Amino acid sequence: METLKYIREQQGLSLRTLAVMAGVHYTSLVRLEAGRYDPRLSTLRKIAEALEVSVRDLLTDQPPIQKRRK
Image (cartoon, one colour):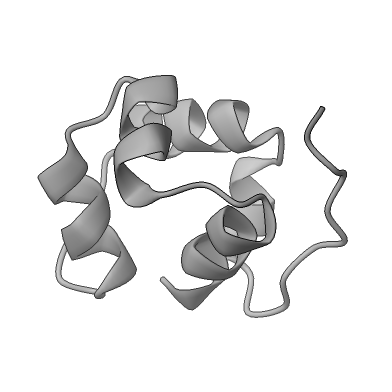
């Protein structure tokens, strides 16, 4: 999931930080970014909420324009 990695990096977040923010296991995020994991919708919602984007943004091929984190 290249878009997830792009959004995470644009926001300056490490995988571990995002995992804590989203309440998702770090290993799941690693596998998801590598394309070796098909997450549940509930997991995608948690990640999207933590990143302040929509689930749709995570699933598209085109990265969204990002808001800057405070």
